Image (cartoon, rainbow, N blue to C red):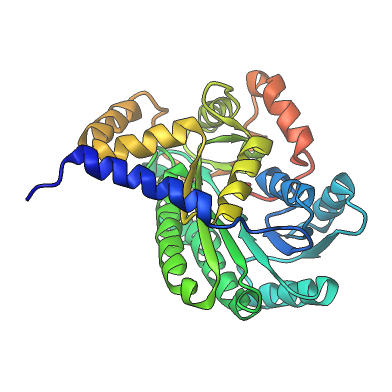
Length: 337
């Protein structure tokens, strides 16, 4: 007997509604949270959101000066601690976890936010680019989450993995980034399934582009100024991108509700559904869009976005405001968040 599609849809909607009604939200009051890449951009916005909900937050990033500015900006009466370290170094990860335990008595929530992004034609991307971004965007979260598991399982903790809509749909001129985020999305699914037996919930979020001020930290390849102008303009377009504070709030909402995955932002949701429902059409549209993007160059050299600024990008008021709001102007690292 065939089950009507409407009945299946109704049952699915009912199940989702029932889950939201009966599964209790995870309280963040008094919880200890570690945010990687927490000194600027989305990481800083996430830290502020956790503080609003009563948590105590440890920020991890490579630049001590950025961390100090971030802590001053957040304030929060002793509920903010910082630790300088590189997420690709296991000894730094272990030291960060030890610091969290020493200062706040343990770890309840781990936020894997630190990441890199490279923009440019695939022809200008090297194998080394793919390996470097995989190490930061995928293997570092894996390594840190496994190291943190013994502490997280003590109190039924939570893990947030910040992936991207680019981890569901491969976006042209973001090939290494998309590959790393696809891998991170798969990792999130695996961790959610296997950590459940330990009472640890893992949430993977797939945000759209966000106004975090981070394009100036990205590495651009090919025609540097054109690539950066396109990337920075899209990233700061109110019609496409999402305010970082709003994105952070929705991500933390997904965490406290215990969602396995969540799209963040309307454009991410639409693109994700398009890929799921019409993969061939989506692929064809993306292939056509590639023809409109800047062509590759003979050189594979990459430069930070801040070195590819033009008059137009430098005087974009939305971009400038985001850079100031999220501690991006003093940054010297290449990164995403």
